[in-house]
Image 1 (cartoon, rainbow, N blue to C red):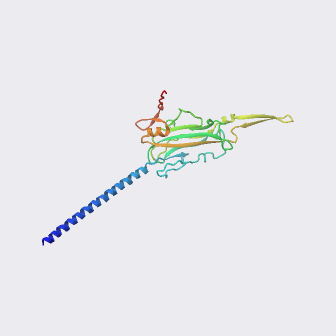
Image 2: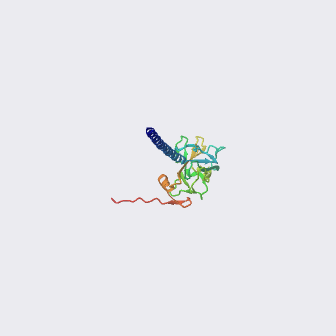
Image 3: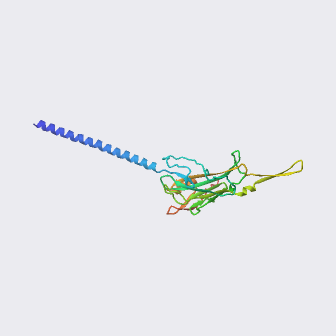
Length: 260
C-alpha cells in the first residue's frame, strides 16, 4: 500500500514537472513569437516610411513612382509632349502648368530645379542663344521660394514653403512657357553682288535649326529633422517656424581660416 502511495506521489510529481517544462517551453515559444512579430512590425513600419515625389504637368502625373516600395530610384519622364498641339511659334505663349505630388507615405519638403538650354542641329548644347529667352512664368510666389542668392540664367531653384502631406499636391509653380521674340535679334546679315551687279542680302537667324529644352528635377526630404536633412542634402539652412512653414534661409556658416 505504501509502495503504491509512493508510486502515485512520484508519478504525480513527474506529471507536475512535465507540465512545468511544457509551460516554460510554451512561454518561450510565445515570447519568441512576440519578438518575431515585433521585429516584423518594425520592418513594416520602416517600409511604410517611403519618400516619393512626382511631377505633374497640366494636372497629369509625368511619372508615377507610387509603387516603388522602399526603393530609392531616379525616374525620368518627358515634358512638353502635349503642350504644342500645333506648329511651334516664337513669341507665342503656351500653357504649361507644373506642380509636385507627394506619392510617398510621409510628410516632406519639396525642391524643384528647372534647367533651360538650347541645342544645335547636331544635338550639342549651345551658348549661342541665351537661355533667358526661354520664358517660364513662375507663379504662386507666396508659396514657392525662389533662390536668388546665386542667379544662373539657365537654372531656377524653388522651394515649397509648406510640408506636403502624403497624397497631396503643391500649388503650381509655373503656368506658361514661351520663347521670346528677341531671339530674332540674334542674326547675321551677308551681302553678295552678282556679276550682273545685283545685290543679294541674306539674313540668317541664329535660332534656325535649334531646339530648346527644359528639364525639371524634383527631390524631397522628410519633415522629421528637416533642417538637418536640407543642410546635408541641399546645402541650405532653412528657417522653419512652429507651424512647419519655411520662412527663409540662413546664410551659410563661414569657414574658419587658420593662419599657417
